[in-house]
Length: 140
Image (cartoon, one colour):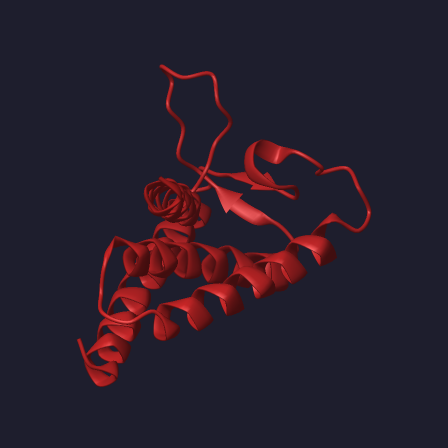
């Protein structure tokens, strides 16, 4: 796949995922059906003073890493999908952290004892899972 197609695909999917997350969060805020997460996944480290700043820096590094390797790696594979998911989730939660200083969580699974999460967290989870599979396959 040439770079123009990869760029178009990247921008198209990123915009779609980003706005899905943003719209879902805005809807939940409007209906007052959400929780505030000032920490990392599952609310860890939410009571530390510098958590928001550290998480913003981590999101920026992750986003840069994803962009760099997405366009550096030739072709198109599930590695590219993993990087695109990670980028989309990181940027969407980054926007929350910059605007609100917390992330809006609203998805709950009553059958699992885990805290609320959002679509960006889902993108990050599956992006990391695909990245881990890619690394483990390369390591063999």
